[in-house]
Every structure is written in structure tokens, then in C-alpha cells.
Image (cartoon, rainbow over all chains, first blue to last red; front, top):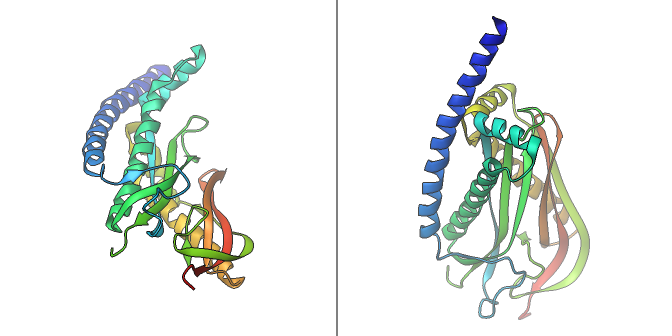
Length: 153
Length: 108
């Protein structure tokens, strides 16, 4: 009886994770695409030195971070994948979303300050522990760089 | 205090290198929010409380770093890097480090 009860809980969690996780992900992706279009005028480079012609610009450090959580369905899919090996696409899309969101937030901060370009972009990824045991519970992605602000801004 | 993650500051010249400065902070979230986070682990999505927490701690780490830089007579910190590590369940350390320098405007 107890086994059945636990099994039922497992499947409920799985279904909830699948439904809400899918919805959250597709909504988030739509938002990301829209905002990326809006912020395309802020060029993000990962070179260390300002491009020629921007040597007189003021600099300011900008950063954006985001913590994104996996859903139960992804956790289960990933642990099954661990048995056979291979790409864990459930986690790939999670990290892709987190990274793009972090860059977008950084670009938003840069655009608030009137910057045209962000150089020396660095990423930093960390696992937020304290939940979900050994599997990745939530990941934090930080994107930071130096914004070049044109004269007169 | 000028803070930059590139090695130069446009229009400025480094006159003195003062060495490495760093600032760090270890923070934990209170249990209530941890429970909310574990619910989020079922549904997926962004953890706003954690995003905020880490942003705040990063600001504090940078503030501590610039305090240290100021104490040794620097007016800018260049080549700043961030690093994060989970040191215990529910707590994470955030470190900001960079090179403290004294800069002057190139015209002068």
C-alpha cells in the first residue's frame, strides 16, 4: 500500500514538473527572443581591449545574474540519462536559458547607463546547493563585463 | 573608486600598482525561502529570492574590495573577477578580486 502511495506521489510530481516546466521554459524562451531583438544594439564582445574609436569612452562595470531551478521531470530524465550516458538535453536548455538571461540582464543594465558596447564579457556558473541532494537543484549564472559609455552620456 | 574588469581605463594612466585586493562574503538564505526553493525544484523556473540574494552579496563583496583598495591608497581597481563557491548546504561564498592601482588622467 505504502509503495503504491509513494509511486503515486512520484508520478504526480513528474506530471507537475513536466507540465509547469514545459510551460515555464517555452514562455521564457519567447521572452528571451523578444528581448534579444530589442537589445541587439548593445554589442557584447569578449575581447579585452576597446575597439578602435572607442578609446575615449568612459567605462563602467555591469553585471547580470539569474538563478534558475530545474523541474522534477528534468531531474528524473537526467538521472535516467546518467545510466546510459550521452547528452543531457534537459540540462542543456536550462543552462542555455540561464546564460542568455544573464547576458540580457547585463545588457539591460548597460543600456540604462547609455552604453553602446560591452567588452570583456565573462561568465561564471555556480550550483546553488541546499536543495535536491546530489543532482543540480538550481544553477546561478553571472555575466559581467565592462560597458563603454560614449562621451556626453 | 573606478572598477573595471579590463586592464586599462580609457583616458587614464596607471601610475602605481598596489597589488591584489579582495572582498568576500558568505551568505545563507533563511529556511522559509529554502523551502520555497525546493518547491520550485518541482515546477522549475526562476528563483527570484536567490537571484536577489546573490546580487546583494556580490555588491557587498565589491564594496569590501573597494574599501580595501581605498585603505591602501588606490583610486581604481582593474581586472576584477568574480568567483562563487558553495561551501555548505544553503550557503555560498562570493569572492571579488582585482588589482588595486592608482591612476591619473593622461592629459595631466
